[in-house]
Length: 104
Image (cartoon, rainbow, N blue to C red; front, side, top):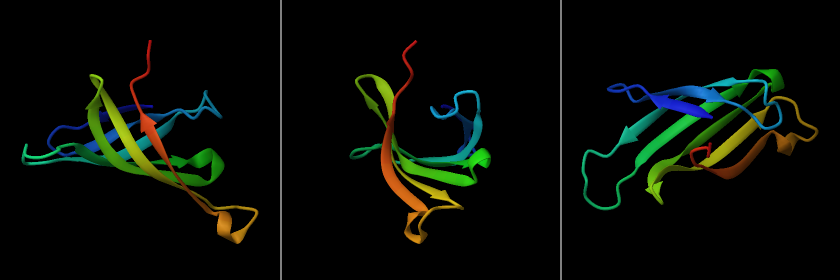
């Protein structure tokens, strides 16, 4: 995953590469908001989504970015929704992800 924030607008853009399909890159769109105050525990909040056009599905992540061990870390909850499923109750899956910079 690669992301960048557009200054002054808060827009978040980038590309997501899924482990299941490493040759495919899917666009990321989203938003970032930062606290106007430095009091208390302050983090950058964000939300972003990917349209998995090849798989007729979407994923949306919401969470926050904070420094952990000197690296930016995204802690998120996500909802994955698919248009076709084997069961009526199986269209939405929810879980969590933590993203850290890739080690070169």
